[in-house]
Image 1 (cartoon, one colour):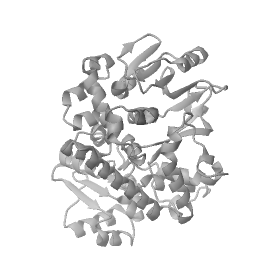
Image 2 (tube, one colour; image 1 turned 135 degrees about the horizontal axis):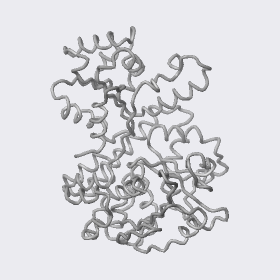
Image 3 (spheres, helix red, strand yellow; image 1 turned 30 degrees about the vertical axis):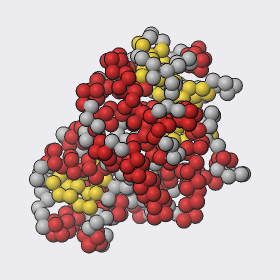
Image 4 (cartoon, one colour; image 1 turned 60 degrees about the vertical axis):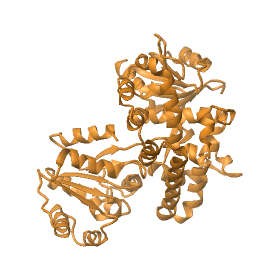
Length: 454
């Protein structure tokens, strides 16, 4: 498996000035694999791996006493019988959320021992970030580490890890040349292989980008076995809810999480709280929704009525669409049969729009975009995503079929005159001056390149 984030880790390692690196992301997106692959690729034998969930005795020692770099390294060195040499050794701290002391110590490693390369990862680390941010806003300048949050915000480099995007999936199943074509970012280059790529895209809709599901598909070519893996992942997530979420919040987290497929199946995909249960209100579910967001398990796409630069300043927080972080898990949670996708029958047709939007959102996220969606005041025109570039905002209309009629895109263009627009479907690439038609399977790398060039 080849992950693009690995090259970002290598770039971090080459910086003259660097902070401890922390990998962020939902559970089972491949953080532990990345730690070990980075160590093997860059440091060889000069790497020390610590798993704070498995190494309970060491974790107990680290949870007492001071947390200076000297003390932390001494305890790790004695427990593993290794020498950790700043400037030579790579220290890997996996499941770091299990030790608040070690997590907090990253601040002192940054200040007192910056020459030591440290890469940390852990499940639900976003929750610690959220708590630390909350504490900073409520402690009136006091040290937030003395209250609930122990995440050393500002003292570490953060790197988000997402499920495999479509080009990574294509490469993982052994189609390296097709992956090279997609990653070139030139939509027309994929046209000769349109039929093959469209079939692979159907499989990506089912498998998604969770590494275990991708590896299982590559090894077995069995959608049934893949679905078993996805079901296990979803069960593990529910266990996380029980283990980590406040007990009073647990029912609301489950309601929000389980409602995502039905919310996305609606023609109007705006999230409706009353669909959870009669009389439900936003204020009752805000904390539960933030928990899911901090855990990296959902993506909120907010509405914008006036899409201008900077796009974040024009978000309407009263209206949003809620997506999952992986299209394969969305299909598994919906109990969508593989035959419905692969054979294109009517059962899938009604849900295809939701799957296509989930997929496009993942491709946008993998390329560093934080999109909004747009609707006009009359409510009779909408564009699925709006993204920000150097020259302005760019609308992205998503079509699940070959049909590319885009009336809403015309309305948007007339109102806001973007540099150009994107329309993505299964139609072939057409590089128009005003509207760029990009096939769904080529969308991710193409949109990044075209916006950056634009």
